[in-house]
Length: 446
Ligand code: DOR
Ligand code: ZN
Image (cartoon, rainbow, N blue to C red; front, side, top):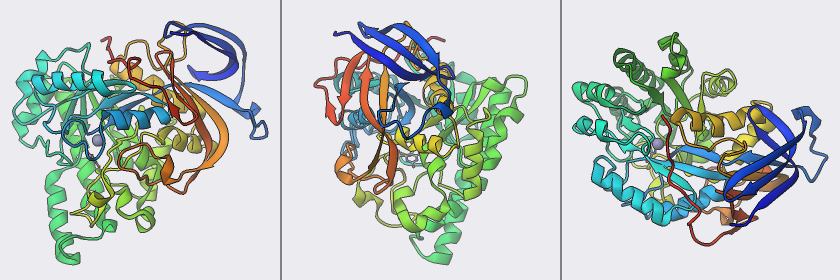
């Protein structure tokens, strides 16, 4: 593998932006020669050559759709989209067909990963009403966590029996990542909405049906079960101001026992956007109020939210037709999460050092990903080079198989210029490298 050196590059890692020479050898960051630390205010839009080197993004919440749902996307298409967005690692969800809920389907997915993933990869194991006995057999050096749907969503993996739910918390040797929405509340809300608005209510009613109360009640239950059993809980895609209080309140002595993920759709959009974007922004849990979004954004900087992921969940345009009942939930995001979050940096909502913490360092630390997520000597050389160069998203730039994005028409200040995975330049100004031998299965230190 050829060696690479970056001369006088500005890089962001470990809470700092520094100018340095960085040498990559044999897939690893071999040497960093720091020259000076640069404050954010020292950089302005007037320097046209301005580039930033970041650790490759680790997206801990992706639905690549392979196997079984590959008309929406597959490992090859969605990891190419990831690479084009500066994402060098995806952690893939189990609601595929067949579901990743036994050891055989789990092993098959790792074979698919090796054959098709273009960036580093791993797969969650999915909990069901009847598979808690398998959890102690999962290899903690290979599997990041158990995904638990405490509310029904795409893929029908709901764990809704009280004793089954408790068994997952009791049996799992791994962190439990939950989707929290109370199904009884949602069902009752849907019945009311159908009575009021007709069989397939307009998507504007989605956050009334998949309501704040449904999220809060389910997240509270997850926290209670984690406290009672001592399980390590990571709540995926929190969407309400109330849920933000849960982590710290729930476990003041062990704040790291219960952690929260925010997803890009809920940080970008609010209920005012249903008018303009319709079912494009329909996802579960629903995009909620502006007040909730502002609370989520504030929580990015004060430690209440630990990670930012995408919940990249592609569906075909034809599947997004209809209203609250008929339109599929979920949107593609992995290709544009970094540049979209860099816009929040431009707006002063978070610092770029904090962005790197939330999208690179913290996912690596939370799951114990070995030697990734930081720009440090000895780490795998997973890197993304950003250039300040305003550009507007048009559909011909979309790499995801579904071919659309809720961000079409939006202008971004930063462009992903190059992506490196294990020291190999895999994406360079719109051109992908051939093959996928560079992509690795993640290993975990626990
Ligand atoms: O909006 C969503 N889409 N939420 C989920 O929980 C699943 C996902 C999907 O797989 O489409
Ligand atoms: Zn998801």
